[in-house]
Image (tube, rainbow, N blue to C red; front, side, top):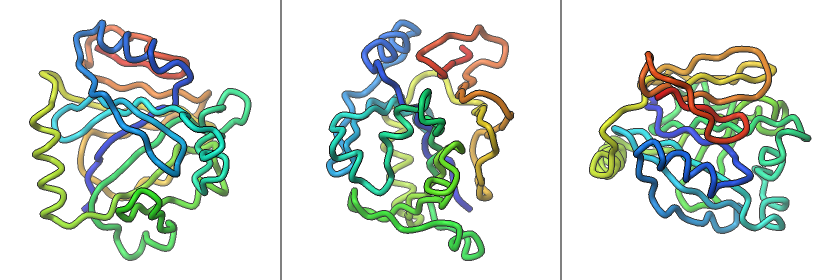
Length: 201
């Protein structure tokens, strides 16, 4: 079965979003550029899962890339969801026809067709990995993890994303304006990290 690997949110002001996360006591990595995709990131790792701040770094690349993340970055005007849900493992054969293969970053990633046909839904993708690769990835993340852990993911969008069977923190969906809320502490306060991005700490 697939595992929830990471969740991303497109942000316009990554420096402010990163600072707000760091003000809560978390440490983000330096991130990396996604060559050919036109994006850059910074990541906040928890136990075996991480959250990714993602933004457009090279607009021309983003506009010519099949993912068209530039549309998701401009979600307030385009209507596309700024949220992505990434899984790791192998897709069930019954689900695979709902996805297409994306190889721009090297390893194979399966992209759900909603990205083209219903971009108002969160981007759902699965990174193809065998058991050994999953364990190496999990161990690498565990070495950088924060003292807390991601307990729940709440996504608002006009319509629900397709979610394959998976293990990990639950992903809850509500119909409404685009928003991502990550729950770290179910009894905590809600902090605004960026437009459409909240964390319950």
